Length: 103
Image (cartoon, rainbow, N blue to C red; front, top):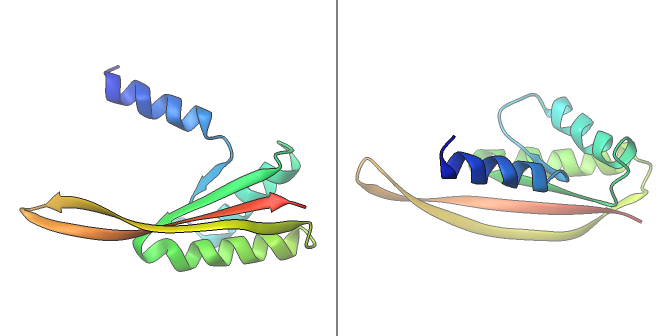
């Protein structure tokens, strides 16, 4: 395993309270957030998203809050952008992190 792969693996294991939103069905991410709070008994969960999945991340946060009967609140929302080069073009993609905390 090369150094980058080791680093990514350790980042994933250190960020057990993170849910990355992508192209899977909405219910999968909601279930992930609820599982983090109930089975793992974490006090804080971060929902991370990029680009077109940002609106899905907002939906995940709102449905999870309602499903947990308002025992969870939004602690912080961070927005930003990442820049990368693809086919010789520089592209920016929006990012958002929503931090939910058990109240």
